[in-house]
Image (tube, rainbow, N blue to C red; front, side, top):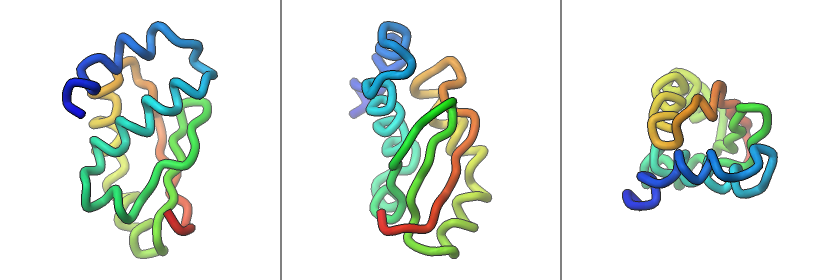
Length: 95
């Protein structure tokens, strides 16, 4: 996974920013930023206009992750570069 994350910025520069490829890259960056335990409780389900949508188990996780959102955005953008994610929206729903 670490090797993949080192090439993510160059991959994003080479693909159409509306493509499913970009979404896949962002989802991979989310999994890395969130880590294994959190990824089991919160799953990236959508990406559009620099907004990442993440499904969470319940309102407790939603509130907790909203507090962590700035750090998670920074980690994702560190992996993919160029401010690909500006906002994370946490929605209650089964990940």
